[in-house]
Amino acid sequence: MHRRYFPEDFIWGAATASYQIEGAYNEDGKGESIWDRFSHTPGKILNGDTGDVACDHYHRFREDVKLMKELGLDSYRFSISWPRVLPEGKGQVNEKGLDFYKQLVDQLLKAGIDPAITLYHWDLPQALQEKGGWANRDTAKYFVEYANLIFKELGDVVPLWITHNEPWVVSFPGHAFGEHAPGIKNYQTALQVAHNLLLSHGMAVQSFRQLGLPGKIGITLNLTPVYPFSDNEADQKACDLQDAFINRWFLDPIFEGSYPEELHQIYRKKVGEFIIKNDDLEIINQKIDFLGINYYLRLVVKHNPDYNIFGVETVKPEGREYTEMGWEVYPEGLYDLLIRLHKDYAPEALYITENGAAYQDQIDADGRVHDQKRIAYLKAHLKNAHRAIEAGVPVKGYYIWSLMDNFEWAFGYSKRFGLIYINYDNQQRILKDSAYWYRTIIAKNYIED
Ligand SMILES: OC[C@H]1NNC[C@@H](O)[C@@H]1O
Ligand SMILES: [Ca+2]
Image (cartoon, rainbow, N blue to C red):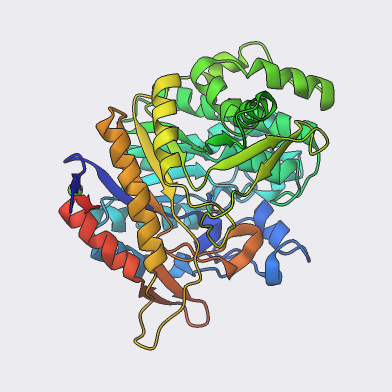
């Protein structure tokens, strides 16, 4: 067996997000979020599930930190619920909400676990949505005020900061396809949202620098390598367009200060303009300390003129494995993605801020969850991350999605991604076999393939 040792200081982590695990959706002064509103709207979420209780992490966080310590995590990535600390999105601070996060960070530090904070993981205060939400440029300003509040409270003890989680998902499923909160179906709005999210990212990084904080700051993007169905010209072109749609539309402004021109032209023709002001792109093009990557799957595409505004159809290759999300298991895609990012954008550092899989988990007669498929998935992706590190890509850490089963957005609780199984009837936590496997990987700092 070949041992792949990771760098001595490699960070082994796990990730969650506020709306997906906290519950206590209206407790201790927390304001409503757009996901509270969306999940309370009939027909939006599978089985009518909501995040009202979720994993009850708001009350059980001490127990959960103990489990993180049992796994030996170096770091824990979580998000802050903006409306829990600023119920109206701006102005009056909810001290009890702020207190929850201060206690959580304190428990983590006591357990020797580095907090990694995502400032925005989709739960916008509903009060701001009433004023247009991310389609309103003012929300960028309110985001920086919110970020500054958190920077001032926790900036001296938290080493890793992520402004946004997956702005592509916030923009398109949220504002073009209507599948995510706030459930808007308007492509032009989605483009304005994407721009304002990027603008708020740049403004928050500038503010972080001005505060002179000791930590590192970056952004997390869902990045999906795209492959052509055939090597004919039309399919290759479709591939380039899909790559621009998902990946470059965010990577280019952040790293190069410009939008992909060809796609911008298509949008101008087929969708309409969105407002970019004078030095917006300069603000967005702030130097960041690392790029966060959420990797799950690859896409295979072919040209189909009447499929969508790009004429790009995604196809599902035969004979491949798929997770419960219908996502192709393609570990080599992580290697290809890391090599491409290093070549095309050369981020100073990269963290895999999410990687994981949903499978049909159940508790066996022995009271355990034998999630062998998840172990195989994680091991294959770690192997490919290691291949990229050997090729010189500065990958500094790996966060599994997710620490625990949780509210999987429009799929509710039907999709389980956790290392820890949650019994939603009694909130019992059960370490899956993958949790025990991960604990040994962290302890040994190598995988064997
Ligand atoms: O779909 C799995 C995960 N993907 N990235 C964002 C997270 O909130 C999701 O649960
Ligand atoms: Ca270590």
